[in-house]
Image (tube, rainbow, N blue to C red):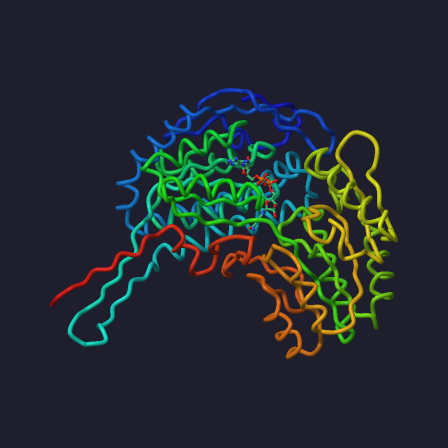
Length: 487
Ligand code: NAD
């Protein structure tokens, strides 16, 4: 692995991992450049694992599995708790690393580290509370005993937009449940994953319990791991398109899948909403991570009575944001992850504008090095453009006008996605009614941020299968076993 001085210059050397992490050993290598989205410069080069490396990671996970599942929950818990503490102690370096390789503003990166670490604390607590079940059969003649066992070796695949939190949201429950794992982070943001593995090592995670590999050939490498009968779980966070491919791949060996996929969140504001609160919520729901979040508000539906004032005030807030290098402490909106991401946003916005949408601020990419798209508000957006149906994944707020509650629900549901939705109204009965009518796994009622390690995170429709976090998240890594017991 090689690093440029931007990386080596700031951080504790313990965060400079040494390559693939397999069976507790660091294996040097290069092959995948990691770019700084703020400048386009190369930050580092990480190893490019092939199928053989992946199979060695499965061997390592297998070698550690029996001992780890027998390790007392209290001990597993304490290791996770130490990992939480180490992440917290290294929060500033981790945040800088995230900002460097992902581009997000430092404030967002700090928020991510705190959120990510909490999954280790939460699952340190949950590790000691794994429940079972006992009941009588309806006849009263027999007994039903249900135990939960670790499901087995888990392959964890994570996206670039939350390089720390998407990893801890999987590693935490997997380790708490007693599973060993192979983490494949996104190639755009591998440094955070490797740095966290370094901290896990320091926290006392035994060799082979967590393995990390980066690859430029995720399709073949993942297919090889999923076809190995020792791998019993795939936990994936990423786009719906890749999720579909992986579900088909996992079907070949009937591997259990948890899928956290894409979103197209509606943000519904009624005339009676607290406008200041709705604007505060809109800014968080839209601009956390510069809009590169699966829960990002993608479609703002605003009732006619307050539509114009909402657009006007949202425009001034968006226009006031400071766009710049992610790790500049003044920055409020960093660059997008890649030049392709900027091109996609540009395509969606340009098409909407050619169909009648009007940019009240922003509306075109910025020239120069780095991958910048300015905070943008679009009004008069037609509901039949791609902008209304695809994930924007950028700082573009598309605003649509609606008249009735029924229309708001119909528009909100006009998508294959079903991850998150937001509803703002002072009438809590209406807000709950609309929230129930919207087909998503999560609804923010008068709140623009819903992520919480203690809550079940996940989507309906084509936004996913299963839930992460909360008290059920650990069950995604466990197999229920029913004992029919006579006694
Ligand atoms: P992506 O689907 O392109 O990639 C996600 C991961 O899958 C990466 O590690 C990538 O290397 C890997 N991958 C790509 N092709 C693969 C293949 N054929 N086989 C195996 N692995 C493969 O997604 P992305 O661009 O990294 O992330 C953005 C997407 O993630 C958005 O759609 C966003 O909504 C979604 N996301 C969802 C959640 C959630 O909790 N629902 C959270 C964060 C991001």
